[in-house]
Image 1 (cartoon, rainbow, N blue to C red):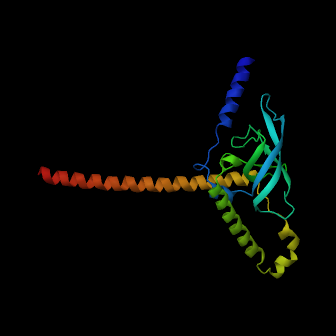
Image 2: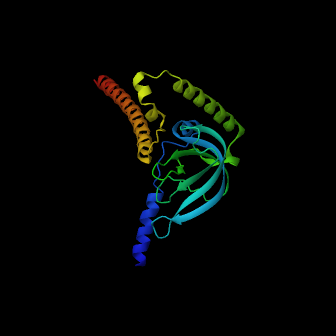
Image 3: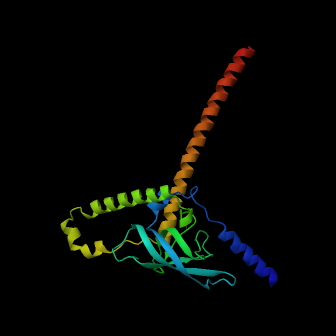
Length: 219
């Protein structure tokens, strides 16, 4: 029984450590990818059963102090929110410590909670520099300026008929977010592969030139 338990623990540990990101987390890329970016003060941490005997999910209550980005309607998480994290999902950040954080988050449509992962630039606020805050301010201004321009575009007659549908927030699912990251990773791998093939072709050409030169000198 103990052996079986240790085996299951090992399997889950491997899964938990399997989070893969496209390089180190970056502030600008995290801002562009996240649905919701804000500074929040975590004041309540609750652990709940995860479905696995020794692991617990974490539900963290957070008071929102400043919003830098929100893809949704004005009433969306203005004052408080709940951050969800599960140790069974390899990339989830578990907000188990109280305090102020800069949070880059997705919206989980299945639970209504926010979640962040280790591929984001989510950190304790004390680890964020003044220059990074200035960068966030600039990114936020640019985002809302572009959003305002987009929302001010003239609607067609067909769009006006479906205005109620258009005003509903588009909520990406966890699967869509995962696919987006996989696409970025594949694009990066393809780029690296092209570079490797170019280098290999160049080295092959040099080798061919060297062989021809060697043969001429041996005659």
